[in-house]
Amino acid sequence: MKVKIKNFIIDNLVVIIFVAFTVAGFWLSGGVPIIYFLNELVDRVFRNIFLVLALIIPVIAGLGLNFGIVVGAMAGQFAIIFVRYHDMGGLGALLLCFLLAFPMALFFGYLTGKLYNKVRGQEMIASLIVGFFAQGVYNFILLFAVGVIIPVSPGNPIIMFNNIGVRMSVDLGLHADGGMKYALDNILRVPLMYLILIIAFGLLVFFIVRRIRSRGKRTEEKKIPWRFIIYCALCVITIIISVVSIVTDNDLMFLRKAPFATAIVILALCLFLHFLMKTKLGQDFRSVGNNQHIAEVSGINVDRTRIIATIFSTVLAAWGMIIFMQNMGTLATYDSHRNIGIFSVAAILVGGASTTRASIKNALLGAVLFNSMTIISPELGIALFGDPSSGEYFRSFMVYGVIGLALGLHVWKLIKAERDKNAL
Image (cartoon, rainbow, N blue to C red; front, side):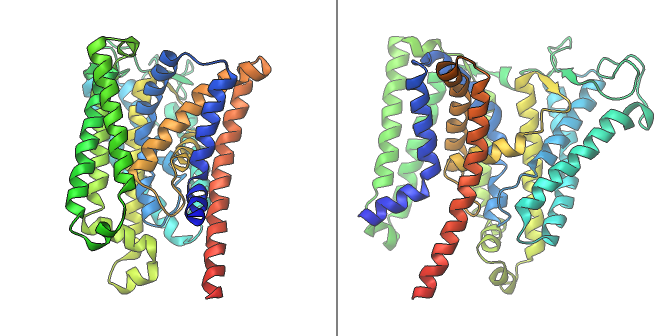
């Protein structure tokens, strides 16, 4: 029993630390208003979750944590800049951004995947370098090539006054149709408690159906389904809270309405990833991630599979960046993408993922916990030092600390497993 508890703590150490940090932040800051906290959390989670989900496939395929999703984010920003340059707005402009970003992200992902195959075993370091290199190319194109090599119309609102380079900030809301700001979010907004009720009920049905289908397996019948019981209990409690809030019309019903259309897009991606792992391609991802040599002997084209995994991640990152920017409403041309890779990696690690294991659950939980930390940090800075900017130091410390801790734990587990193997 003690061994199981110890292993559980080690496997979930990062999650435990972030939960403790969030609880301590609430306590030390004197209590952040729950309505403010939930409103901010909903906005941030729906804005960021698509980018975090883009990291799952490379981890499963053995590529580790793909910091190179920043390349996909740049593809999404190129598409946004093109659309805004031609003064397009509304949902049609947003869909055009998705369409334009796809071939660019596909090409960038292919090149990045080819590079990863050349530096096998050092993919995470290579992905960081790819991001820095792409940043230089991105800046060269938008600061110099636009207006010098690429002709532009004089006086275009997103071009600098000397008609060379793109402006530092591009407003996505300036258009007769409202621009691209909230183009996806505003399709349909519903009270948050209604959305939570729908999600909790859907998850409850999912867990029950999965349990029924797995009962025929001998290995499942011998196990105590404590996880199933906990998950179902949490869903039931959430359903009860939601129903009570709706019926009594309490304070929770005054929360900012949630973007239902964005939630549907995120759900569609989760279902896509879930069913993709059940296909031949998904099994190839897992096989390559578990052991490349055995996968190659089994007839799997390892290099091709790794490239496909990188392409998936890059394309999803490009689309995730477009969703992110339509929620922000303003494109910081040279800064918006800069920390996308670091923050997304930190978020999925916070959810309990590692360099070799990641799931949809890790991404969703990580997005909630990580964004909870970013909301609490300024309040904690005020409470401890009387300066909200000091909260940024907490956030930076936690972001880079969690990445270092996760990588350190991964190396420690590998060394421990090797020692145990030699002891036998």
